[in-house]
Image (cartoon, rainbow, N blue to C red; front, side, top):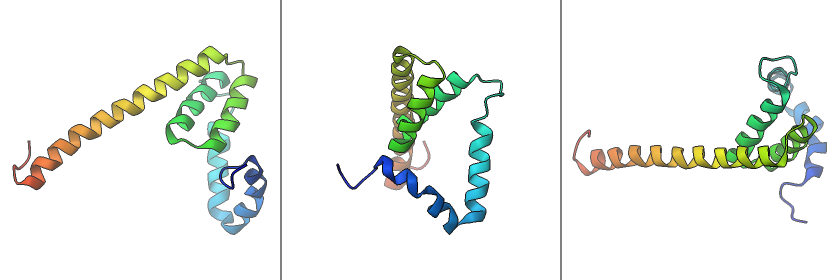
Length: 115
């Protein structure tokens, strides 16, 4: 096993929280609020959204947690696969959008002004 992104790291969360308790308390309260089970978005869809975001941000810890919670909430392998492909398409779309911005900025820096 590598030294990076081990599930064992999650055991150090309490010690990490103790290093910045005010900020950690606010973060954890926010996190608990968005993970609530009584929201308008059902838990399975919340987990599929969370999983898609975790895939996009490439957070291995979030992938672990939200894959498990999606399975518990009743998501299927097919739904997880669709969520992954939606995330990939949105990420690719974001790349294209930033490419358009890069083209405009290139023209500005080249001296061509705003386009």
